[in-house]
Image 1: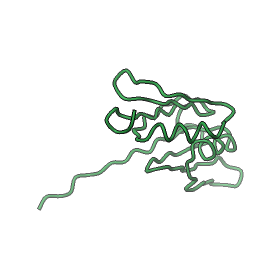
Image 2: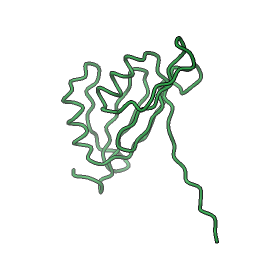
Image 3: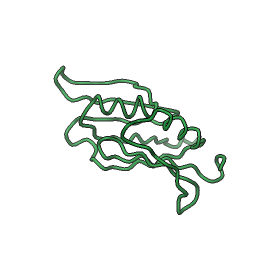
Image 4: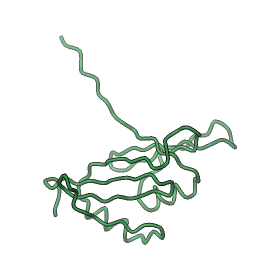
Length: 129
């Protein structure tokens, strides 16, 4: 009998500096759910997990976690539907568009308040358009 092969799941850690701004962006604008929020002490930095459609992100106020300006590449389907959903919210600080990706498919890049970029990519064979 052969042993099962190991499975891997990556969870990006993105640095945040302002909890209300992070929640406004990730929860209210992008529509993620807050799974949990942890602090070692009442006055300590927050470390939280947000998720949406199988995608999980960790957001951290801890010094040394993540780096501002990081990038996350997200494979997705139904990019037009997601784009319509978030642009209808009229978020004051970002109006993302969808562009043809030079390597194929289409991509919508959103930049969080802490300069991290999420590149939502839809392969040309995975959805409409």
